[in-house]
Amino acid sequence: MQDFLNIQKLLDSLEEIVMVVDTDYRIIVANKRLAEMVGMPLKDVLDKYCYEISHNRNSTCVNNCPLQEVFKNGIYQKVTHIHTFWDGTERYEEIAFTPIKDKDGQVIQVVEIIRDMTESKKIEKQLIHSEKLACMGEIAANLSHEINNPLGIISGFVQRVLSKIKQDDEIYEEIKIVEQECLRCNRIVRDLLNFARPGHLQKNICDLRDVISSTIPLLGYKLKERKVHVLENFGEAPLYIKIDLNQFQQVLVNIFLNALHAMPEGGNLYIGLKLNDDSGKKKIELLIQDEGSGISPVYIDKIFDPFFSTKAEEGTGLGLSLAKRIIEAHGGKIFAKSELGKGTTIIIHLPVIEMD
Ligand SMILES: Nc1ncnc2c1ncn2[C@@H]1O[C@H](COP(=O)(O)OP(=O)(O)O)[C@@H](O)[C@H]1O
Ligand SMILES: [Mg+2]
Image (cartoon, rainbow, N blue to C red; front, side):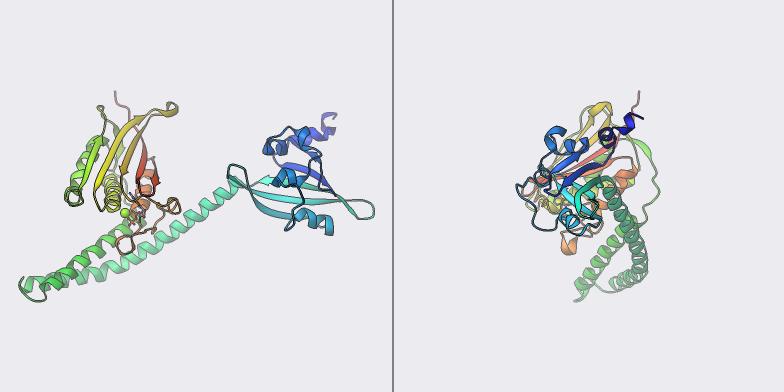
């Protein structure tokens, strides 16, 4: 019973930040969560002004201060607020202001309770993102299905026309272009379908070094044409992994093609593979590093989003989103580091299979 009457202990046991402010905006009661947030001992927080503590100011805030409003009109208020710390990190807060009045109804103090909503905000954002993805997937599946049929008919007729005209015919070149463009549309539709309805994974145990070595020749001609040299560093020991070979090759091809596209003047494409033993949890780390144009910090968070592309006509924006989905279906993670004008590194972490 004695403990329960200790108000300070009670306030300190709360998850929320609590403070009571008087009409001068001086903090007269606070709990240890406030002290932790501002990085000061609790005794130093008391008697400070709230604008000093919360906003590092030396006078009252002029605009939009709910505390001032509550003192003026005596009505409870709840607001949401993004608090930016010194190091630039942000915290979503929900702040409730409750007036304490004297017997004449005059507000003499205000209780401020701050709840950290950063985690739930993050989850809410992820939810919206995955709903958006599901919706896009649905549209993509329907659209590609609708386009597939007329495209098949056009391609069929193009083939018939080509078989009936000779190579020196004046329209031969034009029809060849129609054929190529049909193939391009086919590729886009296939990517869209893959993205919208990823196939079932057929996993087998393989040495990842062999998987990569057998994928590079698929791009042989393009590598030569672009004057891109592949530098491999795969280590001596096999790195076993359980993967769907086809889908994994698709991931690699998408990443390699992006790297080639970023190096129109040629350059080195470094592919590194190693066993990472960080924090006692073994995982395979695959690095694919180019010396290309790099990605602007404005876009870096968007590159794994479906349909995000900076390539106008040439891109579908599905390569990396598909890669991310496939890697995650293999229990892995994919992320990118990039410096504008210097190059990009795609990093993939995958679970390793240990064989005796
Ligand atoms: N290696 C890279 N170098 C520079 N930019 C890249 C690289 N990889 C991806 N990007 C950027 O990410 C975007 C999305 O890539 P992706 O999903 O493969 O779609 P697409 O290649 O069809 O544009 C690209 O349009 C490009 O802006
Ligand atoms: Mg791409």
